Every structure is written in structure tokens, then in C-alpha cells.
Length: 167
Image (cartoon, rainbow, N blue to C red; front, side):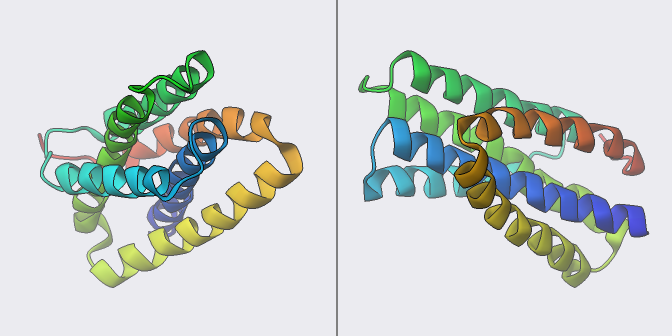
């Protein structure tokens, strides 16, 4: 049970990292406006809501899709930050990353049995992740935003074996 709670906390950390890293790379490279912030928030929420209903999305696929989408947006922003389509394509990438946020709750609930325990551990990881993104970016810069999603994915993927899901 402790491993499952730790996994929920690490997942919250990972989700916070992805969401706020999207926000930072878009704010720095594309636009520092309210619209950019709302694109990240709304796209993430739409992806999370869609993920609630995607029962066939396997856990490891959801995690991998999130990080692949992140790197696709990262490289899109480096390649052509000022194109009109950059923000729209970034919204698609953020939404794809958000799928795992929704799917996580439906996949993990049968294993932790209590909604409050699941939210407690995921939210604690999320809060630590928010702080870690800003501290890490402030102290280590862009390399932190580039390498950490990959490291977190490598940590999360083996843990999916703890949670067999029905297809």
C-alpha cells in the first residue's frame, strides 16, 4: 500500500512538472499573456476530462504520450516560436499530456479504495512539483525543463506494473 501511495505522490509531482513546464516554455518563448496561461489551463483540463473516459488508455501509454507530447511542443517552440499555429499546436500537446491526469484517477481508484487518500497523495506530489519546477528552473535553467520530464517518466513507468487494469 505504501508503494501505491508513493506512486500517487510521484504521479502528482510528474503532472505538476509537465503542466508548469508547459506554462514556462510557452511564456518564455511564445507569449507572456493571459491567453497563453489560459491555453495551458483549459487544454490541460480538457485533456484530463477526456482521460476520465478513456478506459482503454493503458497507464504506460498515457505516461509516454504525455512526455512525447511535451518534447514535441518543446521542439516546436524552438523551431518556430512566432508562427501563428504554434500556440494552437501547443494546446493540442498540452491536452494530450493532460489525458494521463484524468486516466490516472480512474485507474488508481480501485487500488487505493478511497478517493480522499488518492487525492491527498496526488495533491501533495502536485504541490511539491509546483515548487520544484520554479526552484529548479530558477537555479538550473532550461536544462532542468528539458531533462526532468524524461527522468520522471523513467521513474514512473516501472510502477505501472503495480496497477493491473482491465481493458
